[in-house]
Length: 301
Image: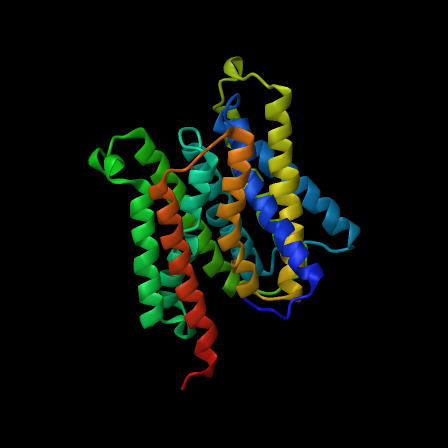
């Protein structure tokens, strides 16, 4: 890890990790009373509102529609990188607990390493990276568990695969973001969160509103998901990216599962099995090997 970061940057790093880790707990509260078709549009709508306020306050604006590269990136980040993973992860959390979902999401950097190898010459897989990938995916298999793998119709397995699908979407998101043109700090998140929110609107029309019961707890959870885990997190993310680096931001993948497990323990009394903890160690070991080799790469011949 980079020891040259300032205390303020580390504080923002932990705040960003907390915003994202808290999303799993808030989603768990929301799915108790609300269908996914209400949670997703509510979260994205609140997040877009917060980001629009921030962008307008900075005097910035979205790029013109004639800027095709920018809008292709915004649409890709909004659909594949935001709307799809939000839907998949929220659906998965209807049957699995928040800390397990966070552990599964920690596989995202491993997917990213494979995709980066296919798309970028400077991100080729090396010996250390291959070891890291093998260790990480072994952890994912251990986390899913042999019992779940026995029956493909098992609801828990389906839920876990949905969350892994969300992790894959986040990985594709990273590939799109790397190739996206540089825009003003709040413009890109405003654009893609707004696109994601618009994509989620049809969900409201297939919702059976006669079965929806909006409680204070579920309403607060949806608002928190939008304002904190989407809006505030987006602002912190862009600010940190402008001051640090993508590698530094990627370290949140180490911290989020731990924070989520802590939140899950105190808020919901969730306790992971020893096999899940072992899987967690394997996943983070895999990510560590991949990051370690990537940091060394510039100094190699």
